[in-house]
Length: 385
Image (cartoon, rainbow, N blue to C red):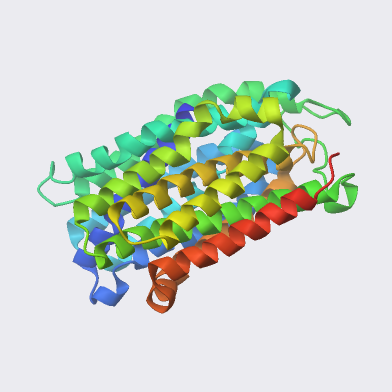
């Protein structure tokens, strides 16, 4: 949970400042968002490789390497700011993107290392670490950006510190994970060596659960990213202040992570299907609020409900994923799920501006309503195991 909080704090610092730093250093304003895009793009590319590496070497060693690379990338970004080098900034943020690829596996590691009856609750509670980051991350970014003579250099040094703080926690988990990997449901594995063979698609007894996990995670990531990216733009276009735009994003992040304090308990009580349907309904409700108008309340409701829906879908989709494999044998399936989720989020992020220009705030929410409704129909059509 602490690792997840540190990870999302790093993400929020990058989201808060990287576009501004890019604008200050880019040779043309058209390239201002390229450093931020490099984080997203490298995260999407490396998400699949991370899953395959976790299957081969274990979660902890891969995440240690990711944290070290994150610190290295942030250090390069710091030097880029000091040296006023836009290419170096793109290189640094690209390296940070490799660390971003490991963040989605923190919840899956927790689900694997806990007892079978606690996997759903572990998924939810680990995500609750993001609630701390929703408040701490932006504050760290803005309060440290002028502590050094060169503007924004201090904020990137904070990213270095956040990445390095995860190392002692991960190293403490190294021995328990190796002990856990030494025994699996298919038989013993050599301690410290490769674990049992990861589950493949053809081995699945219930392939629809895996497809549901893919669809749920992809829709949650795409719709959330789209609405979150367009929300501040639409708010400014509607005549609202920058402060209002910041407010809706902050409450959107609260909606994303606050339900993790209890969504695991709801998952145990009502089941993953009911939680997934609730998430789809919340996404649809947020879209309806956006379609209803362009007042500040419409934007606030749309973003908060969107965040709540993402949380329920993310927890339920992750639960559908982890029931597809025994603990320690999900590397290949995790790689596919994280890869598809990352790719859809990247597509949504890169196309957000074009979609807003073509469809506007209300038209974008009509699309989100249609996609959310389609997801709800898919979940309803599934049979109980």
